[in-house]
Image (cartoon, rainbow, N blue to C red; front, side, top):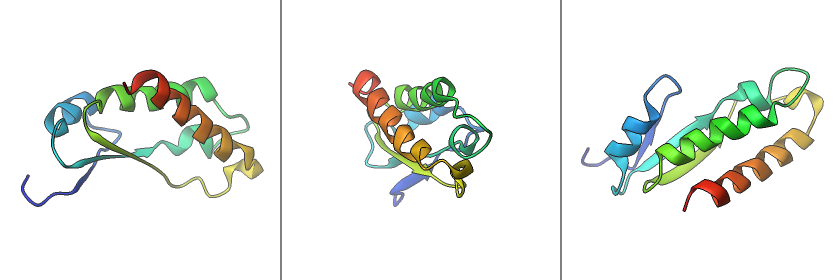
Length: 98
């Protein structure tokens, strides 16, 4: 893995395995958040989104972690979803990252 600075961890991979491989290395565990929670549908499934984020945080403990939010263009007309999603991410980091 010489020369890598970041690895994009797909939703279809084993995030815990990737955490083990990247833990302690100077390689960023990059995770694109699923747009299904924030950018689609009439309601914002906050509990589902928190569980999604928490799984990544637990898998990436000891790694350099980066989240990306893409494909959430419209936010279903509710800009508050973006603000709330950041609050949820911060809360999950505070609870589970240490």
